[in-house]
Amino acid sequence: MMKKSPIGIFDSGTGGLTVAKAVKKELPNEDIIYFGDTAHLPYGDKSATTIQSYSIKITNVLLERGCKVILIACNSASAAAYELVKEYVGSKALVLNVIDPVIEILENSYQTKKVGLIGTLQTVNSEVFPSKIKQKSLDVDLASLATPLLVPMIEEGFIHNSISYEIIAQYLGDERFKEIDGLILGCTHYPIIKSDLDEHYQGTVRMIDSAEAVAHSLRNQLEKLNLLNEKEDGEDQFLVSDFTPAFQKAANLFFNREITLERYPLWE
Ligand code: DGL
Image 1 (cartoon, rainbow, N blue to C red):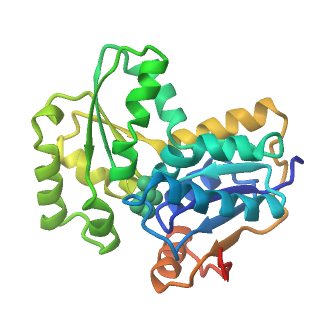
Image 2 (image 1 turned 45 degrees about the horizontal axis):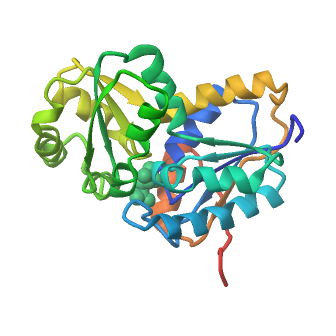
């Protein structure tokens, strides 16, 4: 691993761009290689075994390109494949997921509090959050809810309108979500509707954003290992397993420029 090696980030598709953006904001000197598995999205309703096989394939691509970090930006893949990817990578790169930095926030700021978690079916049904909370003996009262309609809603651009407000109200009207102190945005797409969620709770509930949390954690870990890049000299790369207009559009929008995509099919 070298300081100037790139940071590999992967996701099922566009959602992980929220993480890539947070990483570039926190660490502007770093080069990133982003892999969007557009041929296989969504991950959120797939089995753990399937997500694991995609994750290992993508990890191989990122290792071949010399990444010093493999950041699993997708919550569903973090839930299903982190342990496996970590073991697979060994000492070749640092492996990060988007769940542990949130657990750290719970540990530091939400003990004795009530917290809500929304995410895909995979993330919620895996029970990764409650089991990590239990493992660390945290005194956090967690209410979890799978909210599978939110990803397609966001991808359709139904944001800040009557449809998004109504769907959010239906989901979060759930009794267990009435008196929470914080809400874990347990899916890559949810930072995009942060203000809709804020509005639902009229600013009384803190949003726990895993994209920001993992970017902070990445900075700390690279600093400790003396692996921070001193100056940006390379280029960011964007790989997709399938060319889709939706990904191209989202990438351009996120980074405010025309992004060049490289097609990299995982199986031919
Ligand atoms: N990236 C996924 C996640 O964070 C959401 C989209 C999908 O289901 O693929 O869980």
